Amino acid sequence: MSDVVGIAGDRIRSFIERIEQIETELKELTEAKKEIFSEAKGEGFDVKVLKEILKLRKQDQEERDEHETLLDVYMRAMDEASSAPAAQAA
Image (cartoon, rainbow, N blue to C red; front, side):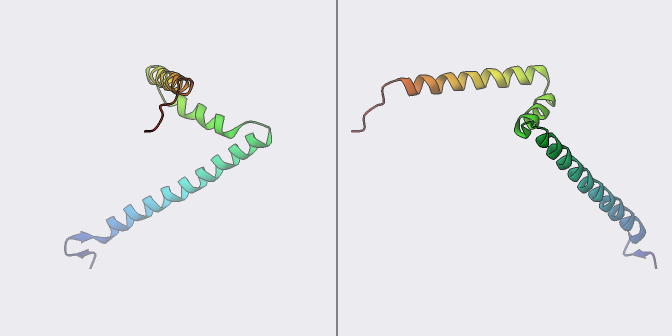
């Protein structure tokens, strides 16, 4: 009997096997990505910077500009706060 209470077991198996295949492919791609980062590190590149470049390339120019503006505003606010005399606790 291929139909148990209206559930097509073959169709479920198909979905599960396709998902498992994709999970295997994702694992292989993740390993390949790690190898590339390792290769870059071996050649003296800073992996953190490479990851930051990847993150920035996913954003459009407007998002990057907004991020850089906020970063600049926050950094200046911190600099101004650290140069101002600290309030004394009562």
